Image (cartoon, rainbow, N blue to C red):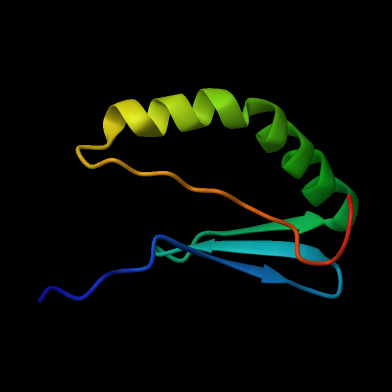
Amino acid sequence: MTPVAEKFEIKITENGVSIQSGEGVVLDFTAVEALMLLDILKNEAPTLQEMAKEASPLPMRVQFQRTDGPG
């Protein structure tokens, strides 16, 4: 079995969010910037899901659900 390489790592920090690629590139976002990015990704989710569906040779469905209450 081939080991799986991590594509990226996401960490919640005291300043916001840090995303590190497998190649070591780090993107740091303040809390406000991270929320803006999250809003953009939520709005683009249907398009991204369709793109992923078309690109994948296997049937795949990813669903995110909040576990910290309504919202």
